[in-house]
Image 1 (tube, protein in one colour):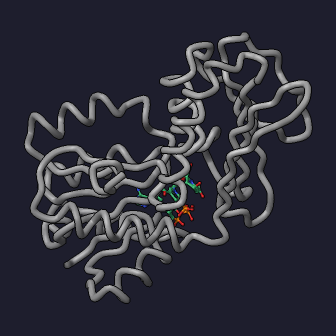
Image 2 (cartoon, rainbow, N blue to C red):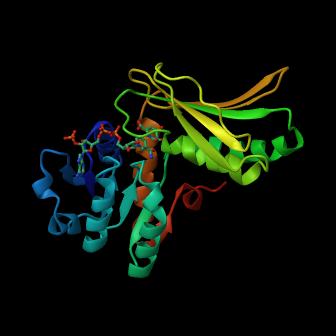
Length: 246
Ligand SMILES: NC(=O)C1=CN([C@@H]2O[C@H](COP(=O)(O)OP(=O)(O)OC[C@H]3O[C@@H](n4cnc5c(N)ncnc54)[C@H](OP(=O)(O)O)[C@@H]3O)[C@@H](O)[C@H]2O)C=CC1
Ligand SMILES: O=C(O)C1=N[C@H](C(=O)O)C[C@H](O)C1
């Protein structure tokens, strides 16, 4: 396949390596220094675009891919408040969009277990649920997209939780008080951490942790390339659970 990489930073470069290993061709790479190449004409030459840029640039990149009718795989996080509008436009205009807050298989297994665990915990009100995400210091958004997906999995399945609260713990602020129906997500920023997520249930006598730790970015990048291969020749809006068989 001919692939356009929208965003050629940490993830764009990792995706390039995996895509080349899998026999694909990179026909366009875009970062902040060559935005003049980001045209409908250039995008039309690609079979698929893979978008890992920034929360402030992703929406215009989706728009350009829709105009070029180039299927797009989106890994960028921090834009999901606009998701419903984008989904409706994609469906109305007959475009192809694959989105995921996390493309790694390990995290998607964790998403599934998280939902099952949350359902079980309805019977055990003595446990309080809390969440932690740790990422590298360059990360622009908080809480992470993955943490939001985990929180949504809890909220859908654990009757005593209705929403989540965000706490960027940079050492300068204290743990906030949150309403009893809220899941607190603590975001920590530490040098070079690719992404670690923990969902914890804590009682006065013990603690259960569901934890995923990425050792590097290969899982995210491989998942994005496999999603691009899967998306080819499809129309509609898809995510990992459409592609995975569990
Ligand atoms: N869904 C998933 O599995 C994963 C998602 N992510 C998400 O992917 C995104 C990117 O992460 P990461 O690669 O670590 O970030 P980086 O900061 O390393 O890379 C972002 C890239 O976007 C480029 N860029 C800036 N403006 C534009 C534009 N208008 N169009 C296209 N590219 C542009 C930047 O260029 P320049 O360097 O010149 O500024 C840079 O190359 C983040 O939102 C992150 O949360 C990350 C990992 C996994
Ligand atoms: O910014 C990152 O690096 C990551 N972002 C995604 C997120 O916000 O969940 C996925 C992964 O954790 C790495």
